[in-house]
Every structure is written in structure tokens, then in C-alpha cells.
Image (cartoon, rainbow, N blue to C red):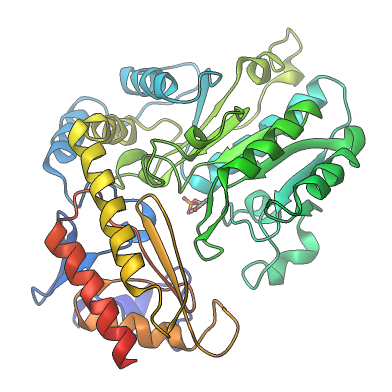
Length: 421
Ligand SMILES: *Cc1c(COP(=O)(O)O)cnc(C)c1O
């Protein structure tokens, strides 16, 4: 049996209807922006392998740091013990995050980083003896697939089988010029029940690369501050340069109380989640009363190998070359968007930083289940480009090492598709 046949015998893939999905493509190696299959066919990874890879595949520097770490210490229990990598990573990250972020709590992935953030907020109020337990979130939010993360995400086809078991959340619209005052009133009307407001700053990835203005988010955040509502910035997707600045929260003046990271954190090398918080939140858990402890942890919390890949990724991220590349990608996307925006098949095209997203005109409403999705997906796979449309929305968010030639090739194939499909 070849690998695909063996796969189909034993594997259940994520987000995949196994009855109708095409067989998976066996990938044997990666280099820079590209993945290579067993026949040597090259694919440009235009979506950074589900938005995680920021410096390219099998990066030699990250590989070297991880290999060194593996020979020194692969894992150690993180309750009662500590290690250099976890401490150094927390020190260096807190140093570049908004100034109020003072403590780092590790977990395993984006969803767990969110679970930790929600628990921190709810128990913060519990420990203070205040009964605030309502969570405010955006209607089309996506914060992950575990139950708490699903509960604070918009109700959708993804959550439908579980909706009756998800805790109630106060959903609000994305802020804009015309609704901002109404949204503030909605938050105020929750009186002293609102525990926290969780949001994806500037770009809602899974919703379809939906973008909204920093100025209105800032106003909403300032209002939350006034009303004593804690703020959780979910930067699992937007963190580490995606939006053009190191973090999407760098576009607003108000500071979030809690921030969540994963995806780009290790450069896409290892699974790692991180939740950071303010001193005020941390201190609400300090007590001689053991019941005020944050009783949360995972077997692999702060895994040293994951921390070493995050440290290596951070070295690369802070290199001036990466900043220049991010600017270069932003500029290229902007020129491309300007060039194709009037094409009759482009319903809308939008950009934030290194993310450009275009809505394909289908005659129907935009939908995750658009039949155009498979046609587009296959068209680009044939052309050696990994684009994974969200329904009829195509987006490009490449590793920052992508070359101008590779970008030009992706753009030209999209233009060709616009004319041919
Ligand atoms: C992907 C994502 C998550 C969940 O992260 P996982 O590592 O897939 O569990 C949470 N929030 C946002 C904004 C995401 O894009």
C-alpha cells in the first residue's frame, strides 16, 4: 500500500468530510515557502500551513536550536520546576508586548490559550467575591474548537451540534462609525455582570478574513475599561507580524488585560500556547487560601522543545530583515489589490498587513459552503499553490520569507483564475 492508501485506512483528518474529500497529498519535505510531495511536485504554501508558519519550512536556524534543546532536556514537569527556555521566552515576549502584560501562562495551542484566558477572567471576579460571569464576544468570532473556546465563538455550522451545551454569551456586532454608541450602551446595560470582552483584534480570520477599524476597537476597549470589563485580545492568529505591526494590539491605544498567542509563536514548528496577563489579574489569585489558585495545567505545559523553537522564531522575527520583508509583502499585496479590484468577479478585496483577502462573485451570498470552494482549491493545487479558500473567499498570508517571484506567481495565477473560472 502506498502512503495515501495507508492514510485512508487509519486516519481521520481535521475539518474534513472523509466520505467526499479527495485523498490527501503526501508531503515529504519543506524548504522556505515551499512544500514538496512524494513525486517532487512543489507547492507554494500561500497560507503558511493554517497560518502558523512565519519564517518558512524546515528553517535551519530553528531546526538547529530545537536539535540542541532535544539533546539537553526534552521535557520536565512545570509545577514545582522550571527551566531556562520557559523563563527566557516569557522575559523576552513580555518585553515586546503592550507594557501592562506582566505574567506568562503556558499551554499547548490556541484553543487552550483561550480556555486559560476565560478561566483567568471568571476566576478573577470569583476570587474578588464579585458575581461577574457574562462574557462579551463578537458575533462571527472564532476562538478555537474546545468547549469554552467554542462557547465564546459565534454560533455557526461548526458549533451547531453542540449549541445547546455552550454557555450563553453576550454577542455584539463589529464596531463601526454608525453603531459604536449603541455597542457601548449594550455593554453598559450589562451593569456589573460583564466579566470580560474577548475579541480578535483587527482581523477575524476564520470568519472569512473580516477586517474592521482599529479606531472603533479602541473606542470599544476604552469603554470596557470605563465599565471595569476585562479585555482578552485573541492574537493567536494576528500575533507576530501578520497585521503589519508585531501585534494587532499595537494599532490601538487602550491596553488589553489578557493576550493569547499560538500559531506563529514557534514559527509554526511546535505546538505551544501562551496566555499573558496584567499584574492586577495575577494578584487576584494570590492568597493564603488555596482555593484562590488557578487550577489549570496541561501535561506538556511549557515544553522545553516548544519553548526553544519559539525562542529561535523570536530571534528571526526580531531580525530587521523580517520587518523589511513584512513591509515588502504589504506593498506587493496593496499593488495587487489595486490592480484587480475592479475585475467583475471580485466582489470585494481587503488587506491588513500581510493578509489580502478577496471575495469571489458567485451570484449567491458569501458562504463557507460555497461550491466554488473546491473548484478554486483544486485549480491552485494544480498550479502548485496552497490556497485554502474559506468558501468563496480566497486569501493569501504567506511566510515572511516569500520571494517577490513567488508572490508574483501567486498573483498571476489568481488573475488567470479570475478569467478562467
Ligand atoms: C486558530 C485560532 C484559534 C485556535 O487555535 P488552535 O491552535 O487551532 O486551537 C484561536 N483563535 C484564533 C483567532 C485562531 O485563529
